[in-house]
Image 1 (cartoon, rainbow, N blue to C red):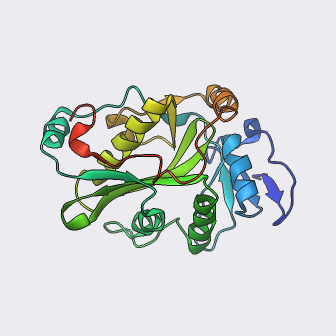
Image 2: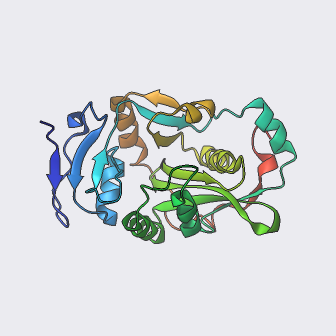
Amino acid sequence: MIRIAILKPGGDEPFPPVSRALADPNGLLAAGGDLSPARLVEAYRRGIFPWFSPGEPILWWSPDPRMVFATDAMHVPRRFARELKGCGWKIHADRDFAGVMRACAAPRGAHSGTWITGAMHAAYNRLHHLGHAHSFEVYGAGDRLVGGIYGVAIGRMFFGESMFSGVSGGSKVALLGLAHVLRGWGWPLIDAQVSSAHLTTLGAFEMPRGDFVAALERLTAQPGHDGDWNALVTPFAASTLPGG
């Protein structure tokens, strides 16, 4: 029988050590609790994130290994690099956080469901207003939102949650724009949570969970940038990205 910790909504009991997460399904650590800002921030600090489908209890995960990007080693495919050179798109930060979340939650292809539930929308918008959750948006002709990414920032660590493309390449530009800015700030890693072949093509790699948690202890304790990133990040052209 699978046994995981059950957390009470509104409670303050700590998460169990991530070493107790299940191997199958990989990383399942706990269920229940709530999506309060305090609970979410504590989860991310410890290498834990919520991921559940509509109708399920809140499920908390800490997979091993962990998929991450090094901000100084992003991979830009050669063909995409050529496309960037003539790209007229512009990259902003925190201009439309709610819009990026809505776009990330929209059904894709043959899939009609989403794990970004109404409760998740409300929770991460609260985090955004508190200065802990941020988005990078990509705008094309007519000021149309063509791509974006959002996630949580604690100290000098960014935890990517989801990204979308309204036009082919939009999510790649958003991710590369985020990595470019974070590298300039001296933030070395972006958490990508779970492995995927697509992320690997952009430079993501697997890190043992123990190494990842050790990095979090160091990075989340360092001074970061809470608050509105729209005022902190000057909009820039996609064509100026490294590789573009």
